Image (cartoon, rainbow, N blue to C red; front, side, top):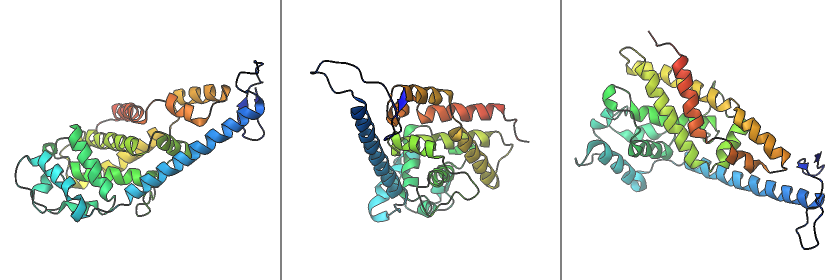
Length: 268
């Protein structure tokens, strides 16, 4: 195999075929690689723009209250909806007005929480675990990690490597981000369960530990990703092949977080 000087992709020698066959000359292979790269880049940039727009959309009671009503119905049944009520605290909000907790991650914070509750994956609030606060903070952690919200900076936490960000974008962006958010919330609940008589004062440390674990798992290269990259390069394929061959993000993160949790001793 040789490397093309124009697109820097491995190229195979041309295969002799009849005049009726498609042109497989090195020039046509190179042009195809360049075209696919441009299309892939354009698609990922569009996905990134969509993610950033979604992450910076603020909660608007005039248009977004139906989502809050759905959350009330799923959590409290057919009881009359109250936009401001002490019952929101039972779900893990910090006050009687739940909308104040969405100031950081915005509308996406509510959407992720609602999807988590709808899926049946949300940890039970009866255990003392602050589901709403955990979910909203998990959304904020991911927005900062993937540099989606200028109002939320990673600070001392790590930011996504270019490969990890491209992995998210190549899979569509919104759906894998939501799946990662659910895994992060569940991991926080596992860490919370290891504490003896946890209180709200313990949540910041749980959040930091869970975020650090998530970053470590996401940043760690997997053997399958190396293998798929090698096979893709050998075949002269574009980077999208690697994205589809690699294991989905959420299951890989789930396994990695479970492994970290299994090796960590219980907190005193």
